[in-house]
Amino acid sequence: MDDRQQVDLVVVGLGPGGEALATGAAKAGLRVVAVDKHLVGGECPYYGCIPTKMMLRAADALAEADRAGTLAGDVTVVPSWTPVARRVSQDATADWDDRAAVERLEAAGATVLHGAARLDGARRVVVDPAGGSGPLTFEASRGVVLNPGTRPAAPPVPGLEGTPYWTNRDAVRATELPGSLVVLGGGPIGCELAQVFVRFGVRVTLVQRGERLLPGDEPEASRLLRDVLEGEGVEVLTGAEASAVEHAEGVFTVTLQDGRRLEGDQLLVAAGRRSNLDGTGLESVGLSADDLAVDERLRAQDGLWVLGDVTGHGAYTHVSMYQSAIALRDVLGEDGAPARYEAVPHTTFTDPEVAGVGLTESAARAAGLAVRVGTADLGASSRGFTHGPGAVGLVKLVEDADRGVLVGGSVVGPAGGEILSMITLAVHAAVPVSTLSTMIYAYPTFHRTIESALADLEA
Ligand SMILES: Cc1cc2nc3c(=O)[nH]c(=O)nc-3n(C[C@H](O)[C@H](O)[C@H](O)COP(=O)(O)OP(=O)(O)OC[C@H]3O[C@@H](n4cnc5c(N)ncnc54)[C@H](O)[C@@H]3O)c2cc1C
Image 1 (tube, rainbow, N blue to C red):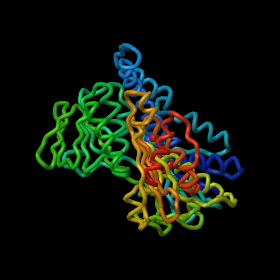
Image 2: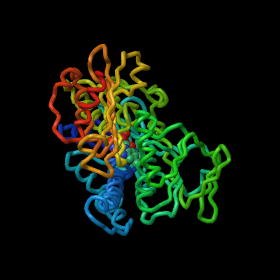
Image 3: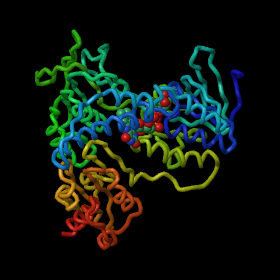
């Protein structure tokens, strides 16, 4: 390949959104160069959503086997990590090999390169190909798409650097389990992985700096999940900050600010993510990674689109894909609906799942809305009663009473993320609460709890 090429589009970073956009642009006939410095597909298929959901599915099977004792007779399961590690490495990630994804993208007509890429002025990208050959420069007539994603953040705790601690990337590659694990971070990733490992017999301590788990969700959801995790044996420490980490003779010692010392065979750091925009040369086009903003068509400036986690509209694969479709239309000069984020759903795939959409009660109040709130106990529903063990949860609805529409909602429960979809539709389409209240809800379903929460809203 010539070291200075004229192309139509360069896509830097092939997370779910970048990969889909590059595929669509190539299929539409553009000359597309698609670059990733690691694996085509990004965090989700190799280190994020897919492997962690496989791990959670395995942990759920153990919990269900345990519940069978109450429901259906004795089941004996000897937990083994071997099938989990095998599914993750063989079925999910092809041993962290992206050949199939590269071939799909090439079949669509794109040129795929592995290497670090950066902007070098408007519509120009320099790629340092993996394997060490000299840099390649591309001039892109339509422009450049950045989808660089994030990496695990390492909190500045003295002693942490240089120790063999885990991030999500190591946890999904584990072939053997530690006897004990300290988890730093009580967000979705920390909570999901804490539950996986405790269900496989690991002694887990979950350390959360803030006052509650899942701080982005409703406080009721945080409390409920804490109760569940503690009931399963996770030691949950909130308002607890690590002030030092040591690693000696195979043991991690985490010292908390109040002087308490925690020991673990392994330490999992799930304390936030850092944007990879810092390596993308934004300053060469007069932009800064620290305060980058994109418009409703994902444009950061003429000929430059940015999408995915780094846009700050929800670090979820579905947001990356949603933005990708909008940016692709813009790249191709097609019209379409602009990006809107009032109804971004999310699910933490613990058991019970914790799902939410739109505004929480406190966010709605902070936005100055005339808020009405309705809640209902999902475990106390008829479906919860028939379901038995494991049926704990709640529904919480947040209404803008002036408009008479829901602006947010949360569901905690078995399949909470599925139940949430109806609330997502209501928020997205601004369905009047009066319409939702006169709908018929099948009996005995979990989603019928939404009807109870609506009644509470109007009580
Ligand atoms: C443990 C975990 C579990 C998760 N579970 C879920 C879930 O259940 N549901 C959900 O919706 N989301 C989940 N997520 C989030 C999800 O993985 C991301 O939102 C998703 O991957 C979209 O990210 P992205 O498109 O911004 O890019 P990413 O997927 O982060 O991909 C960015 C790509 O850009 C490449 N790159 C970066 N800089 C450069 C450069 N300069 N040159 C070339 N390439 C570069 C990287 O190598 C990477 O491949 C999870 C994340 C984690 C960590």
